Image 1 (tube, rainbow, N blue to C red):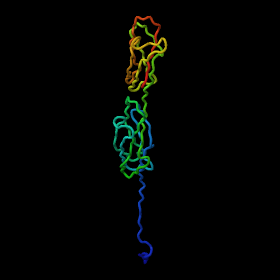
Image 2 (image 1 turned 45 degrees about the horizontal axis):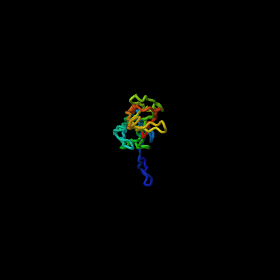
Image 3 (image 1 turned 90 degrees about the horizontal axis):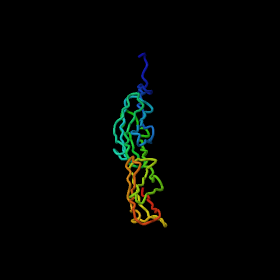
Image 4 (image 1 turned 60 degrees about the horizontal axis):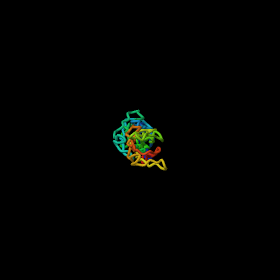
Length: 232
């Protein structure tokens, strides 16, 4: 009205954009690698929501094998994390199996996928978890480097000890060895040749070897033979 006219050159319509100020954020693990000791029982991995915490968002996760075996070294999992409005972190807990087997360090992977609620998948979107082997099988040795037995004693029992660790099942071979020189004992004459394998169960710290001794009627000086361990 009032005599004015609408321009035929300049725009007579304007488009207004309402800028959404809500930001659901970006989801990612805190690190691409984690370590857990085998006897810790669990490992907890944190997923952070960065750059915004508006609205409800979800993200799926799943474990997968690296060198570790699912449900033998760790408990396989799949699931969904839900971030409520304003929440900036959630966690995933995976059970770790503390077995008695002597192994090298092993790995598995946890991966994020399928985000909803407008959030973005950031980096790292997966984490490699290393299960650190904590089993120590120990060291095997005779309890003493010399022993003696009376010829009429019938036998001698020698103790092999396991020190500096006793985890897992371990074995060691043993064998009697002829003595040398003039005082060398002879198998079949002075003692019975003896060989075999000792098995130490998990947690067991000692085992014994018994060697039969021959009580002959010959007048001899003291005789010597050895027992050797091998093949641990």
